[in-house]
Image (cartoon, rainbow, N blue to C red; front, side, top):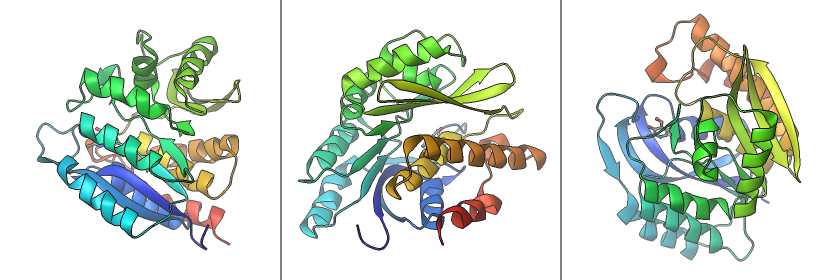
Length: 277
Ligand code: PXL
């Protein structure tokens, strides 16, 4: 590893509404990690808005990646998020498998939320994502994504510990080394469940009154930053859980518009202070 760890961040860039690369880049930077974006799509706003411009970048990915490969750039980690087409999921898989020494892989299985797939997501993409999960060191599905991937019926945002364990072990059967199920609701609490080495641990936080887009991206970005800097998974999830809660508290306190996403900019210094001596 060089003085600064390098992460290839495979994700879209949405011009408005905090999500994907507009979260991953500042978060990784403040954590002292170099974020190298591999943009999968350009959107004017994220898909939660009533309208948006969407430019799929699938065709440009092979040349973009070839240039990186010719330059022999070594990444310490690969972090994938929103993938805009079936082909992109296959390209991401190929990119990960192209390294003789496989980098650490965080696959944020961005597919949907609240029981529904995002409008750009198809059943075929969901099936292909199961294959991508196989090369992951850590995957970070929310409840919706965990249920879709494990072929378990979605019955709401609550999952029991037994259900978490069952779903996570199925996802590990696909090949994922560890699973973090995010945003499980339990009464007035929110849980992030870690399944690692066949052992489950829950990290509990208070639930904020509102949910905001981009929270999953913020969580996975903090997690990736910590993991690539050598922190263990449970510690990384604990820090990410606390950080997301303070961002949600700030966002609701200031009545920020839900669609514009979770506010994190005024709190980034906390991550910087934590990790950079
Ligand atoms: O936050 C996940 C996400 C990422 N990228 C795009 C999205 C969303 C969620 O809506 O629309 C484009």
